[in-house]
Amino acid sequence: MAGRKEPKRRVTVFVGDKTIPLNPFTQDIVAEINLAVIKSLKKVTETEVDNVQIKISIDPLS
Image 1 (tube, one colour):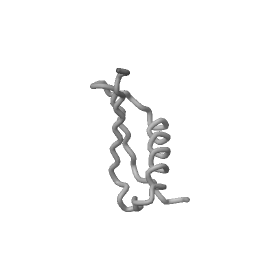
Image 2 (cartoon, one colour):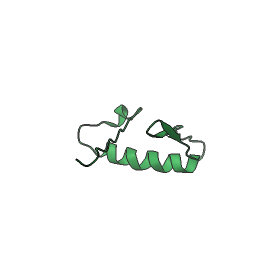
Image 3 (cartoon, one colour):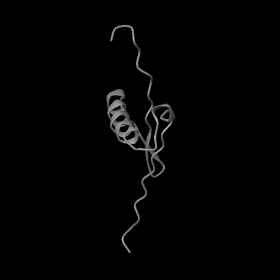
Image 4 (cartoon, helix red, strand yellow):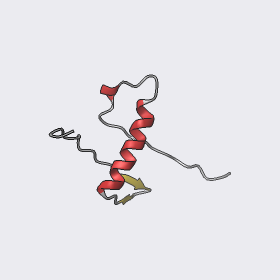
């Protein structure tokens, strides 16, 4: 829509201690996919989604 600005989203990906650089297009895709999943959860309201952190830990095979 004309004149309407989308909120600025910043996505940072860390692998170990290394920051993985993402261009604006990739940041938008990562943000939109994850926000869509999070907003579909029953106990999450639209107003709560202003700061999201996702941590994935992979345990080595025993």
